[in-house]
Length: 307
Image 1: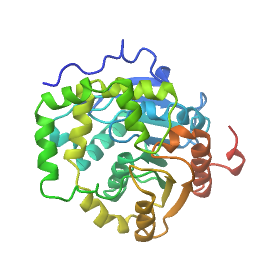
Image 2: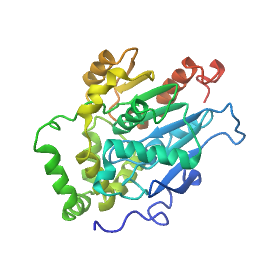
Image 3: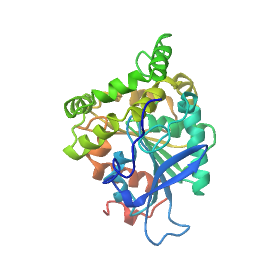
């Protein structure tokens, strides 16, 4: 309907952390997932689930994941319709469906994460999973988390308009056809972040694929963040909010609102960084995640600040 999805043999020829990639069938989808971790693992090695946001993929953790993989078994999937994971029907891109899909993937991998971290919309999926008891981590880390409704998303015309766009195969093709290097750079700059040419190239590969674009648009169309916002105060898993101070996509004031609503939530601001703060400063992000893990008893203090 939308054309051909990304090809692992060509589009993924030099994909970040390619050696850690595998393809797994779970929940009626063929998933691309990366698993990184210490060579000698045991029951004492905690599992960390890293989930990217809308329009991204596992590549978003290119540098961060290897830093964390010194201390964790890191599980990094491409979400449905993103990267090299199958595109489901539109209903499969809703927030509850995404949560159920990830739950099925974890079951297939026979892994239970002790710590979870999600970027942007990925944080919303993990929050949904925690609220529905689909996972029970020691802490949830939101990296510039999109946990509140998008501006305008509550308007009665917003979702129907996007859904019509998703089901029209011309729209994703037009989006992807216009995704040249200049437009991708402009899009990234609009988030308040600055990436190196390697990051721009990877986002460009994704944006030029209409199937990936359809997955991103479908994810936006199928989400109900109003329900999540209502349920967040009942979140029992400790929440840590890591926020780029220059984020133009999810404004820092939204994280402050969440911190006020969720009992015990902690907020840490990264000055000078944008929405892709974990890509701009993977070392600082890794240090913050290790601090959360230590505070929750998942890692001995000696591991903190050791890269």
